[in-house]
Image (cartoon, rainbow, N blue to C red; front, side):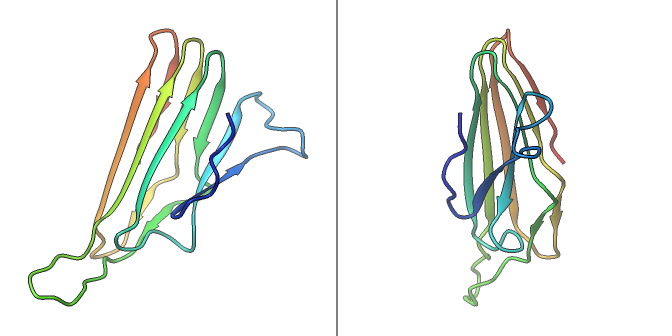
Length: 130
């Protein structure tokens, strides 16, 4: 399965070695953010699947930076929260590794993250949450 087209705030980069693909035989895909990091109110809903017999790794090239939440200046109104959700599914005989680099929260940032995986009993999943 090929990565989805870029859609703010996430873009995708498929890894390759000298144009021949990854050395492990698994598909390697990196999630990248537009700009320098996550800003107040960014929302990303990402879905990844590994089909029957497939092997894939989803990671990020560096830490995800979450900047301070911007306040709209209205009394009593909280700054918008940034929310990222990653849903994954793993078919029979497949392997999926979700291993992004750590998330770095700046002072006064507002961040919610959720990772979910539906794995067939005959599939394998490795989830690393930092």
